[in-house]
Image 1: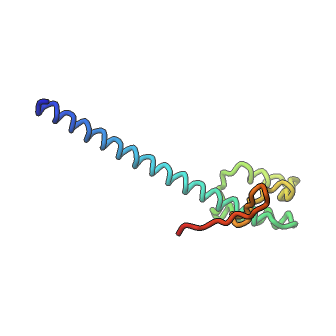
Image 2: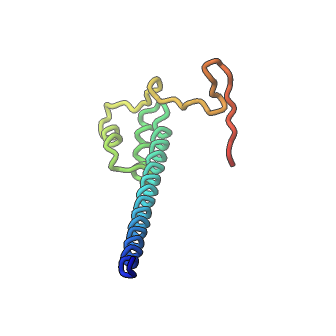
Image 3: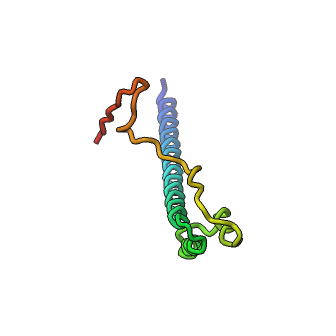
Length: 122
């Protein structure tokens, strides 16, 4: 093998490594952005549920309006604005349709009824 061919192979390997590194940085940045977006949406959802979790419609509307004006909930949320603008719409959580959390790992059981023990790492 000649020195020129070896140099070209090394240069090609370096280029490939640089491209791989840049792609991994791009993917990591995208994942971090998506993680922050998800956390923001979860935060907003929690605030909205807490704001309307009462029987008083006037108070629910005032709570939602405050959240939007304070910038704690996105004003561009198309599902909240109609609730505030239409005074005939009732703001109420559908308690029978709310999702329930799955049991914690300590409560998992096998089909025979035996409890599973979960051991934490760390």
